[in-house]
Length: 381
Image 1 (cartoon, rainbow, N blue to C red):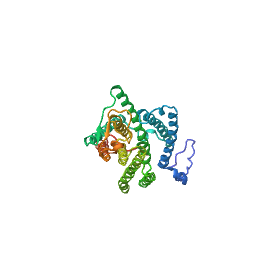
Image 2: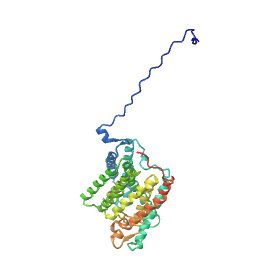
Image 3: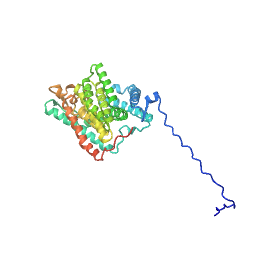
Image 4: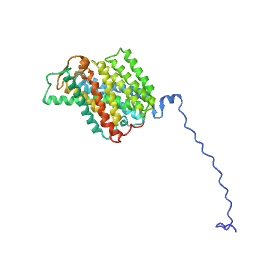
């Protein structure tokens, strides 16, 4: 049977089979060279360089903003232990911190909210932190009074003056808490989490300890050494077990010990108070883990300081604030009363901090395990 003709009446021409096309050769991406590998990792600029650049940038912005604030002459006219002085000084630091965070976010291709600030339940967590912080310091002060290690004196100003001082101190400590949490639990914790392991954490702890020993301890420096030592075994166990989120806890070890070191510059600190600073710093890291942000920590930090300095009138890390509602004085053995350090220098503070940690785990940790509030893991770096 003849094959059908085409429309022109001619027989169809033979169409040769298509020739097989050569496979596309895919080249593996070029590996970064030595210098690039040192600076850049899978998530961009390596965490260590980010921390160093952040610290240098913060120092630079702090110098500029601080110079502008102090050159105005307003700050110099205030007492260093007044709410106004602390508020202006902390606000200058907050402006510098915001500028630094914005610069680093731009450099790293992130949002500022990525630094443990994004929170759909921000008001709830902030208020819960405020209530928890005031309740915790009240429990500590009440225990010291019950044990005879703290005595109440005459009450301070009342009426409108008391309210204005309360508001001024509240603003001051909210800004202070924002700065310190922004440094340690926001940028520091987030950045170290994306690029640290046990060995880098151990190296950082060794450097901190050497610094403390060279400075001959500073104010309560033995508390820094104790904090570094206490975190060693748990972090080593996490490393050996290759536990999930291990990097978060290695970072928490470093940021908490650095937070304690930061407080050795305060006058009147003792080793218990510095160890307590590391312990509360770790609890604040726990709050970031179980709530998903640093807002609970900011509220707790601010309310603790406000209750300590203004409401109860006790020393705060060795500083006795000017203008407070109640008046107190330590009594008896400084190991229990806290002495010049205030309630934070008492051994009882460690028990209160443990209760705060238990509260966080019971309330927020349970919701996290059941997929509820705070259940979302930390954002990937």
